[in-house]
Length: 116
Image (cartoon, rainbow, N blue to C red; front, side, top):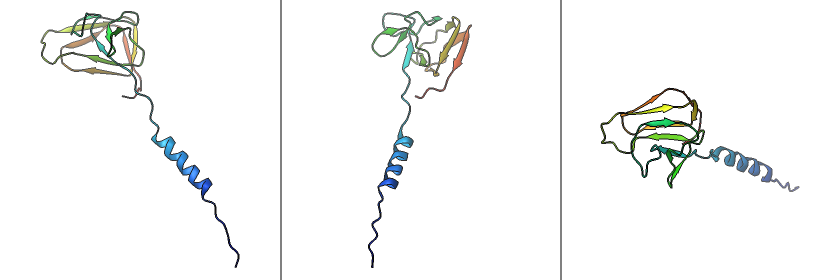
């Protein structure tokens, strides 16, 4: 009787590679909260462009980053209406409103397929 040695290594490596590819997910895009460059987070009206530091990124105010998630509304309580006017073409991965008091106007808003 002859002994036959079977190697499972190539199949195991293929399965491991498939698992790694399927489990990999794209990096999440940054979340930016509108605060119109105020000193601290505050609901407000203003102009959304790509050069003004009107977005809070978790550590300080910064300019808009194309493809980021735009968050509007700091608190649920205010009843003042706010209008944010887009100055030109803006691209965002997503837009989230935490209260119903914001209106976006003017310009062009393009949503892309970022992951959050």
